[in-house]
Amino acid sequence: MIDCSLIAYYMNLAKSIYRHKKLLRKSRIGFFNQTMSSYVTSNEHELFSKGFNVENNVIDFVDAQRRLGETIEICEFKHKHFTEFLHTLPHDDRMYLKERYLQEEEIINDRVDRECFDMIQEIEEAVSYRFLGNEPATYIDDAPDIDQVSEEEFEEAFDNAFLKMISRLG
Figure 1 (spheres, one colour):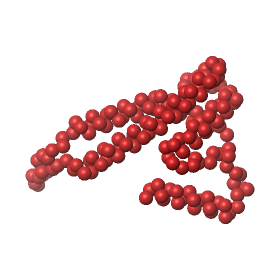
Figure 2 (spheres, rainbow, N blue to C red):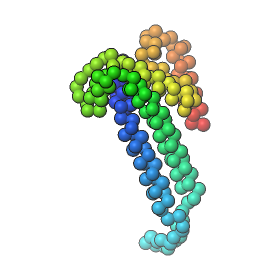
Figure 3 (cartoon, rainbow, N blue to C red):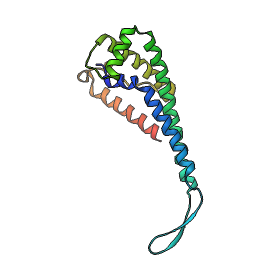
Figure 4 (cartoon, rainbow, N blue to C red):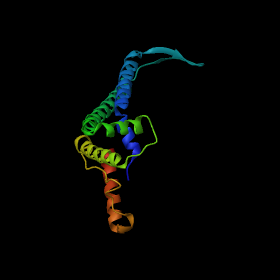
């Protein structure tokens, strides 16, 4: 089964990279434009000093910058390899992808969609190994039929997925 939304995502990666970089710049500007000194303020009952919490604010800012930077790096990797793939396609196939996924025309070419989706799966696998340090998730096409999986195999797969999730959080 071909995931058309994934193909559309890849066709719009350049815009996504641009938006992420713009968000990165805006967050830097916003962080450094705020007051980082203490000031006096009041409510109806009292006058008090309020200050910039360096520890919380800097940690949050640095974490957000790091996550955005990693996201941009992954998107640029995907975009580079997907663009290289697009340049290997005949002109008519590239035009089909642009018309269908960028201009949202109601046309279908299963062969080109399949080729594109296969390449996207390869790129996603490379991203999993290179950036995430783990094996890629099983694709729907590669997954065994749920009726053919024994209860023990299902429980083992569930436990492994749960342990991976816990290890990422910890």
